[in-house]
Amino acid sequence: MRRTPLLLLPLLLASGATLGAQSPHFGFSLNLISPTGDFSSKTYPAYFSPSAGYVIAPQKETYDVGLGGSFTVSFPMDRNLAIRLNLSGSGENGTNRAAGEATINLRHSQFNVGGDLQIFPQGTAFRHRGLYLLAGLSADFEQFDRSFGDPLYDYTDTTRKSRMGGTIGVGHSFGYDAGMRFTLEASYHKTLTGHDVDAGDPPSTDFLKVGFGFVF
Picture (cartoon, rainbow, N blue to C red):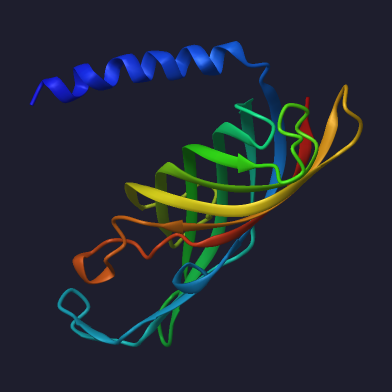
């Protein structure tokens, strides 16, 4: 069982040397996060609460559009392909409402560490210019907060969750071959693991992300 990691080690070292030999492109972006699916709106059925002593009406949870930021390092491998390392974070506010109950303030925040493949159909990966397609995986470190008080200061219940996410998207770099270029990128993120609500997991954190930034 120990042979597999030893066999992979030369490949990892070779990969690291290849990445280091390239001229990377560093990027920053400001992102708008638009929740989709159950992350946007989910209704939970009525249930009997032993602590309250009565049936709690159906609860509807919704999250609003959030803000985030990303830092990226793109390593061109050839004219059409680049490998991009991606660090990003974001946060969204929401509410949980049920008839006859006080509104619960919701707050979701996450930090993502991921890697993407970028495909440049026009062969401009070395210059990071023009149209590109992307697909990747990420480790998502999430926090879900619930409070009856001020949503900025009075959180009373916190759930932390680490799970894997996947992303696909399209982007475009505007500008000249040298110097700073502006980027516009749209992508879709989906939670791939740990989203079984029946087992007590939070709903899948699915969202559309639109980012505007620059790369150099």
